[in-house]
Image 1 (cartoon, rainbow, N blue to C red):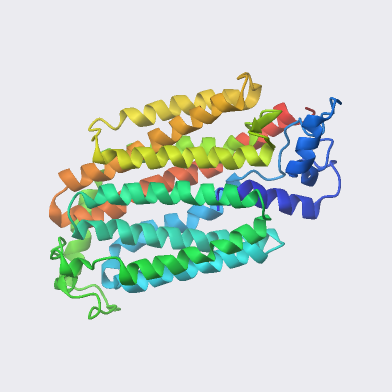
Image 2 (image 1 turned 135 degrees about the horizontal axis):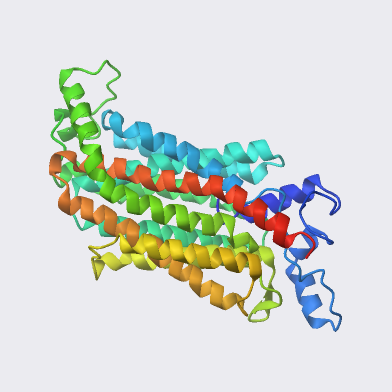
Length: 412
């Protein structure tokens, strides 16, 4: 959804505004929809006129941080509540629910022509993502420690694959058709769980000792809707007491995520470079936003896969570098002093490398250092930190977008 955020908001802006007289509306001095046409863009490059129609960057009325907040708040709520009772819900129910919400999100966003319905659709995607992440991340605690490397690599591949597929299909198809084609994803999710994944009961006994139900086969476990008994109360209290120990894992996750998502959803749409080509195709502002998302996900994929080769014990250094990266790109979004899109392109790749590195090394450290009895809970609870970071970044990005658009874009 975040790869499509700029397209979604641009289309909604074009449906609700007919000229450029908004506060700092869809486009300053031109028509937003025409900028999005690769053919028109190429025509301008081939012309001898020096028209600024296709050269000035523009702001959507709302920044892509609006989509980010809708995409993260439900996930945050799930991560804050689910770890405390999710063990009583069979894995297959959680996974089917995640797939259902994923499908619903693509349908709502794909057919919608109004902002409220789009927001609901993005929220459904967030529920799917939050439920899926906390389910599969906890799932890894039932396997060998090396599984976390596969998890990190797989989620990284999903990011680069999704962004690349969207950017590629948008070259030929509309936003709505491209989004609706993603309905194959939840279908593959269910099929992979049913036919590819080896169930944990066939590999290792549960590593969580609080309840004997964890050792039961998924097919025979059932949801236990009942008041918490004494054993479960002790389990809850013991984990609450363990949370302070997790701060050293959660703070790096929070810091790196708040920095990188302020870049992604506060700055990407404004880091626009005129007359940029990819081969024979010119890259307009929406194109450049999509390719930033692609290269960011590429960096995440590379670093999340790096655990197979290197383990960074002192991973807290990476969030500090990410903060520095944000400051540099914030100044670039204001002044646009770099001579080329491609320099910023590689800075975004570097951003993804830092973010993915913190993520995979943090969770791998948990598997190595946290006692077995607390490990499954810790994996789910620590993941709350990245959601808090993304939520903070979404709120901050609203102000970043408005500040830059009001003071440095309006009147370009």
